Image (cartoon, rainbow, N blue to C red; front, side, top):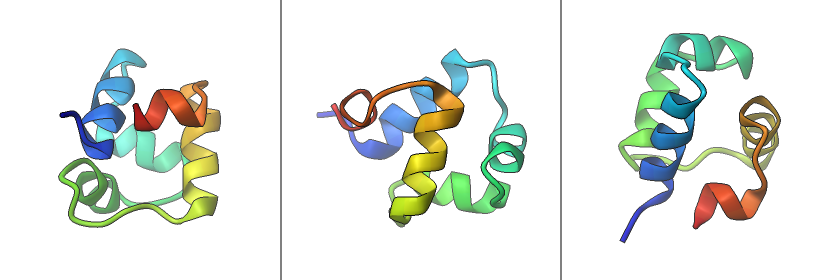
Length: 64
């Protein structure tokens, strides 16, 4: 079963973004993106909205 972190990483890579570039676009740190992708922590709702906007996906795309 794919996790949120797995989906986030796959979508980020599909958009040709490094963790650092992705973090910059959503105004967070590369370390925070890594923590999300490793399922150590979950992003806040405001960060989820930024993630959706940057990746151009729906919430369902991100969590399924």
